[in-house]
Image (cartoon, rainbow, N blue to C red; front, top):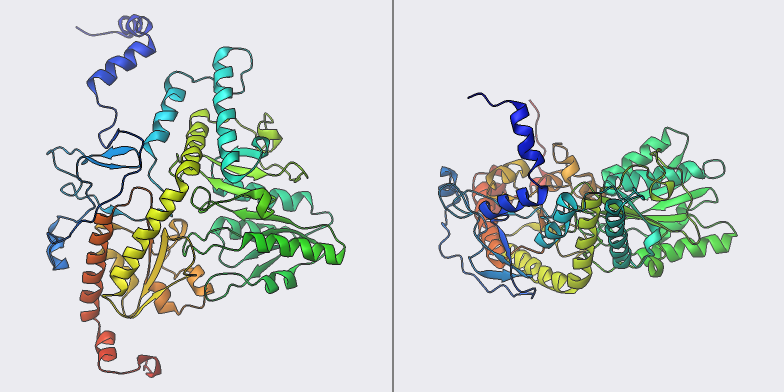
Length: 502
């Protein structure tokens, strides 16, 4: 019998959303990867890798090595179980790579998802609807999230403006501040190693009549305070320097930068230029206090701190007030700086991610530092001619290593069982060497042979040991096939060879 739409409609009308959802949840498990346990940090015990095959060529048959969480292991309040597959196998048998690309994005913390779900299914009101309970409860949830974000960075809740992510926040703050002050000040200072969205925003402003100074960095990736003060001018409206670099993990001295700007302005009797920092890679990973650091504006990303994608925030100081022209016009939401309906579920997820980060930052950092040391020691003790890029006192969850006498593209292709990158995810499609490493003074071949290892909250010791084993095996194999490596082994200085061209 042919079913008509008229016969279907009464079924949906007579089935409340709550009952329909409950009937589904009773039949379908909501999550197969993570199940809640007691919210207690667990330690990760040492795991041997005796079962790993020694020859990397043996892994090219289709079976790929991937990090596998033993069933029952508790970590950070959750029990990690093997991922279910059609054949009932684990993540390893399914060929899932080990994930070490935390600077590109982080996996959402399951507690964040739990916090978000009611906003999709029950509290689905528009937070800007002030005439009924649905809007009120959504507004309350957004206000709570705003307070959680503010508390993590030492701000007032009214200083937080929700956006779609750090790229939008950077565009809004850099362009907005510059445009507001353009009648009197048309000079901006940034660095050569900023994220591409900052550099492109500054390049766009340069087409609008602004002058931009790009500060060089030292070989360790840090800026020189003397270079900064020398670049400041009476018509400088904005200084934008990122907190933690997304490719090499360098932590810039934000307090010193802020103090240098303030002292220069006082000595010269001019209005202090505003100080903006792109903190997408810093928030939730290192302690930040915008008041203590003297930050006027800051960009935040949700998916870089185990929150959802598609949401971020901008810290815009209200007292004394930071003035900027909005890029998006409309309903006047978010203090009139970012019009558009605030996505309550995403914002609540960002708030919960910030709450978790505030409570667990110290434990996360200590554990990530131990894993980082294990990775670096494991590789450098077994492979020679490796350069660590960036300051050694940077964020430990971002490790950038260059492997001499190895072609970078070949290295990445041979490591398909590990999710890595050779630089920023936003520029990974380009075959050009990293502009960040070139700014450090790295030779083109070393910049081409770099790998970025991103370690995070859910990375395990077993995964690190597997990665060390694979890196050592693959690098040695590629070098054995390289005529340059053979020449180096024979004591020939290849930098002094004059290559003929045909």
